[in-house]
Length: 93
Image (spheres, rainbow, N blue to C red):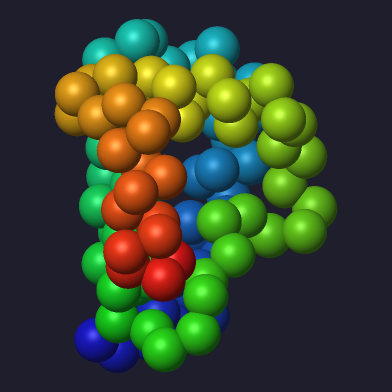
């Protein structure tokens, strides 16, 4: 996979910044955005030898934000927290 060029990265950052608190998105758009982000992140994380941080240091993601999103993701794919723990143990992630 090739690296995104500077113009592409700037457009992506500008788009994200324009979303602000997300009020401009309806629920289905927010769901589609999360689904795309999860797929992209997972593909990149699997392709690396070292861990890939989930967020940049200045993302402002709180523990509450993370817990709400992770809980919804696990529920959507019918995975229990115990199963996640087992997968992490077996996979070394």
